Image 1 (cartoon, rainbow, N blue to C red):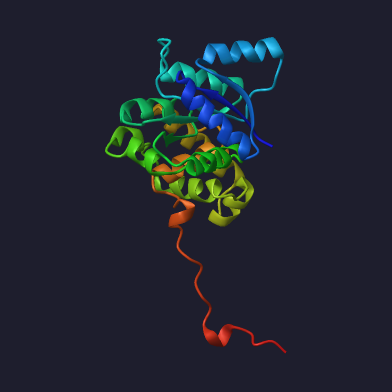
Image 2: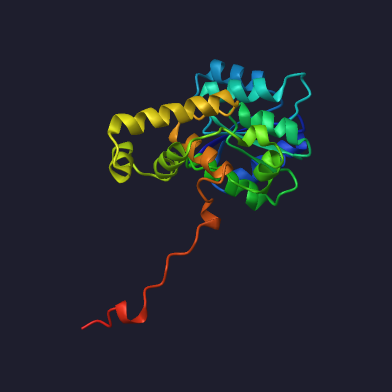
Amino acid sequence: MSSVALIDDHESVRLGLSAALDAADFTVVFSGAGVAEYLEHRRRTASRPADVVLLDLTLGDGTTVTENVARLVADGSSVVIHSVADRPAAVREALVAGAAGVISKSSPLDDVLAAVRTVARGDALNNVEWASAIDGDRAFADAQLAAREREVLRLYATGLPLKAVAERLGVAYSTAKENITRIRVKYVEVGRPAPTKVDLLRRAMEDGIVLPPEDSPPEPTPPAEAVSSGP
């Protein structure tokens, strides 16, 4: 059962989310108005970090989205921005700081719950709000990967072990590893760090190197003569 913390300075929003999460078998471990309050709760109770933190983009305590997301990610939680998402620059700021994705406050509760489930599983959240945040921002999307680096990233991010990537491309394991290191460095240089394999998958989807699951082409149907009719 995944644990969730709610950080929003509107109590009514927190109450509605808490009820929906409880009904969906999540464990709400904290509900409050600020990141500092949550971290103090963690320190006082010696509790584990929440699997997912639903965080409002703008809080009323004067903190910035960058510092809030960075503190929560450093504490060990995945962060989903739950906001009206009408400030693309601030949303991009949150994503650069390490947020796992964004879901609009205007979304149906079922979509919010689905987003939390996706991130709790460790999967990349790729939705309309995410696309809108990076649309038109070339600096955000351009890590200037070489052709070989893009191919290594495509294979590695979609699940192949690095050794298998090297074998598939006919290169040494050390070469494939060096490519992944260079890829990570390039993403850091454009403000889009990718320290984990999930992060690399997210970057690959953002840059069109890997298709999101819903956009993946269907498996080809074998010709009729190739289908066994059985004994």
